[in-house]
Length: 234
Image (cartoon, rainbow, N blue to C red):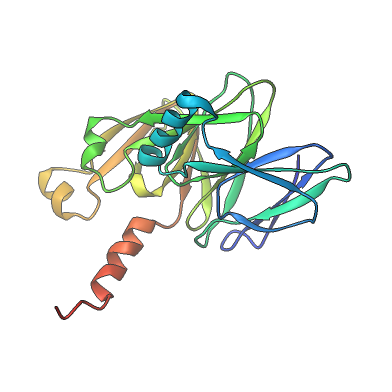
C-alpha cells in the first residue's frame, strides 16, 4: 500500500492510502483520523476460535500488545487512515516476504497489512531479571509480501550487524531486528557495574542482519517521573 510519513522523527504521523477493498490491521488507539467510508471490524489479535483466543491472550500478557486488533477496509472508492503511537517518536515500515521474520520489542508493533501475523518469542531466562519485556514479537507473512509498521519512543536508527561487527544494546532501546541476527542477554559489566551502573542487563546482538534502536527509553522516563509524583498522606 502507498504510505506517507509526516512530522518525523519526533511526532511522526503515518498515513496509509488504501486501494478499493484493501485492508490494514491497526493496534487499538493508534488511529488518528480517516476518510469517511472505511469499514472497521474488531477481532482478536491472533484470529478466532479457541486457538486464536489463547494466542491472543499470550500475545497480550507476555508480548506487550493488545488482545484486540482493528481491521480497516476501504470501500469501492478507496480511502486513507492516519496513525500515530501514544508517545512522541518515530514510525518506520518493513517490507516482509514469505519466509522472513521481523522481531520487535513489546509495544513496538503499530499496524500491518492484512496478510501479516505475529506471535511471541522468549528472550531467555536471564531476561526475567530485566525491567523491560522478556518476550519479542515475531511478525511473519502468510501468502505473499506484506508490510509491518513499528514505532519508537524517540528517533529510530538502523544499524547493520555482522559477524565482525556485533553490538550491545540496552534492552529498553532495542526496537526491532531481522532474521540472521542472534542475541544473548548479558550483564553490562561485572556484578558491581550491573547492579549499580544504571544499565543492568543488556542484549548482545551478532550474526548478519539489521537492528533498529530508539533514542529514548520509556522505562527510564517512568523511573524519573515516579519519585516526583505526589504521595498519599494516608
